[in-house]
Length: 367
Ligand code: UDP
Image 1 (tube, helix red, strand yellow):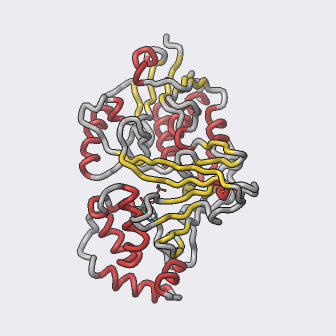
Image 2 (cartoon, rainbow, N blue to C red):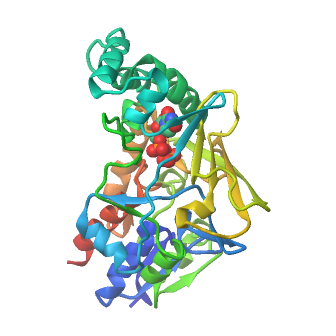
Image 3 (cartoon, protein in one colour):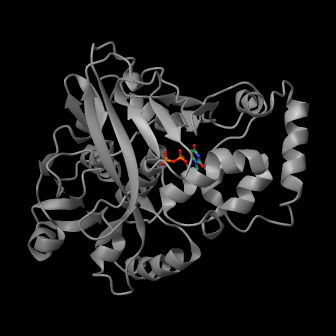
């Protein structure tokens, strides 16, 4: 009999939720991670009492009461609402695209006036179903917003032309005809009080975790410890790239501590013009209404992923989805491995979706 029921590879949200659920059902789990900490990309690094979102800003939001109650059972959430500001060539605009933005751009005051302008600007682009991000954006918000707030940011973020990107990416952002700068439409939203590590600690409480362990370099030996493996890393790496590399977008972060209390007055300012090399500046203390006399900011520079860098975003265009499908077909043949999470499912998941996926897979497995 193996020492553990499950070997969980990756201590991020998917792995932590799966391990928690399995442990709750009396299973013996071992969690391994190649990083020196748990939590995956939701990990917060404490810099002088400010919880720094080390792998990019994470704002928890969901429409699903069950998932909201689930995370709240581990840690209380604050009332943070994400209202990033866009800076285009020194002019500030409200995000997401709403009546405040339309007023700032066109001085229109009513929804009908805003709709008329968008309609007029979009009509030129409208001919059937939007085939790419540019067409989708133009049809949703028209040319002015596309050119000032979307095109530059998107092409920096993805390193690809907007006409070569899938339309669904821009549909993540709400467009609304009320004065409301809330970036999300979801019913529930917040940041864990005391930071995201509290959520991870709650999920992994009482579960054995081994850090600085590279699974793929010690695969046979680690697999032998458990009956089944839960793999949350890159699926193409798992299969040694036999169908070729999947593409990912990576990020480089430049973080600095400043001896001022408040640098930009917002958790996030997006720099939407192409000429500024970073996409956004995050001021971490504002996620938790921090009152420290100092602050920590991070500039986020997108870059193409290559081995050795962190893969943050899957690039779900047709070419990559077709390659992924080949890996997915292989993974479906496996009886001793479960694949899950943003990297193994090659999906642009938000946190609540990762949790949903992990709970569903755990339920199916443990029932
Ligand atoms: N986006 C944009 N302008 C912005 C913010 C977002 O054009 O100011 C587009 C961009 O293509 C981006 C997508 O919307 O990749 C999704 O943005 P989101 O904020 O959801 O990205 P994330 O926080 O996951 O990086």
